[in-house]
Length: 146
Image (cartoon, rainbow, N blue to C red):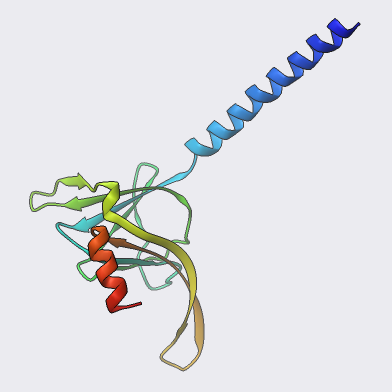
């Protein structure tokens, strides 16, 4: 009798493990991918402001969202904020994308900030911020603008 219970327990355990692996793998593989394309050599803060009605949507390459970051580092888009995998590239003069090393990406954060409109009212803006540069450049920035 104990042998039957043990076999049943083992079958249930294996089934739950396989089911959990399938669910976890499905969740990881179905995340949005965000590709950030920066001007060649850019260092400094990158800010993406979401849900901006008068701004264009993000470009799509297949299922990827492409964030073309302008020279000032601030991109406004009509898209809502979504989580997902992040890839960052520099765009060289020939139009080639060169992937940034992960140690060049500092201080990532997603938050909602309150901004005053020109008419004096306030609105909440969903933003994503990260710093591009070495740890030393980021530390210097934090000393200048804490």
